[in-house]
Length: 389
Image (cartoon, rainbow, N blue to C red; front, side):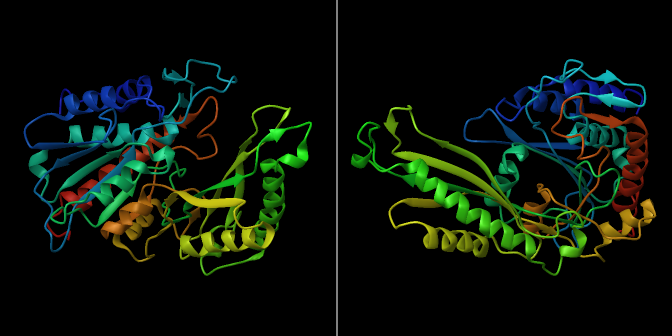
């Protein structure tokens, strides 16, 4: 269509919105809604309880047939990680032309894909759509796919989604059908406060935590030695990665600390059960600590993804990319939750996870151009072909 903004212009506008996870998504959602608001486009906004953030669903073409579920879902997240690193050489929320790349927070993860998806929708003649094209833009993915989790939890039984989905994580233009999950656990230690001059009157919660850290480090070593059926798809980390991430405790040097907290994360492989891993952590702690010294809770559980190798969307993408192998990645995404709706999701997008979450994040211009062609071909195959089902 003649008034369609370029992908570059869209990316420039999207990067300019500071959508760090603690910020509101209201402004970026308003911009997107105004951009796509035209005859034949259906817009549904799903605000969270605060009203500051929302999931956004944009639909074009006929409704999804609940029997065959044809069409295509393009999914991306609106939020980005903080841009507080001191190594930025340009304003992070300004799109900078770096020659062969576009630089700015979120260019790779994943506003580049959002720009491509929006451009494809707006440039498309909706009269050509014989099957639906749906864009799903989620909130708070960087906090553990909270928006996708809410979408699944609150899903109306009558809602129907296309079976085929592309989630636009930065994969360096590879089709990814497996990813690990992220199980976040919160461990609280309880001691007894006292003046540090009279240590026998207290119980040091940090020392309790120290015993736990030693025991959990031993469990981490065991996990690194174990292999599962899908380990072969994760060449760098073919095991459940276990990270003791944040420890907090104490109030003053002259006070025996009564409380300490340890936050940790495990990365389950597809096929692993989060409850089983949590039970192993609990067993490890029971063997190292006394009852009443600790309590464990699940903070968040982003599930792994395992889409079948012969899933049509995976086969279509591999064919367009001349890709023979199946790949897995060691980070989580919204795709793990989408699979609970019977959606066959594949990760695919421009940019590399190697530069995401870092200063001077960038997306290569050549990858943006190639991804634009691939998305156009996918939309043609899944949404404009009467034979697609």
